[in-house]
Image: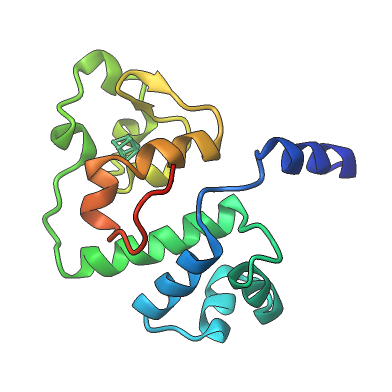
Length: 151
Ligand code: SF4
């Protein structure tokens, strides 16, 4: 990808998620992982994890998604019968048929899938989507809030 495109994405926030540096550190401890373990899981260097946790680098959407996925899978291991999002949110058929979470039967991992039609509204960037999802009961049911949502 062109350097200027990446730069514009950074400036506009498209390449940045919602996770804060302190939150990543708390989550890592919640998962019982060292920086080395998390670096391996995210396919980045230990220096990158240190830079994320110290706030010297913005956590990328891809790393943010992977971390949430690890937390969700940890929760799921102890709760195999989680309801899918469309049941919890009681989505009408007109929302479901255009939503990839329903199309791919993502269950309670809907927050991981881009382009969902939550409440009948599409979110076009990861930042907007995760901002919305972090306030949603589906996300809250499976991903424990280690730090309260800051507005
Ligand atoms: S707002 Fe997010 S977590 Fe809630 S149902 Fe939609 S995709 Fe899932």
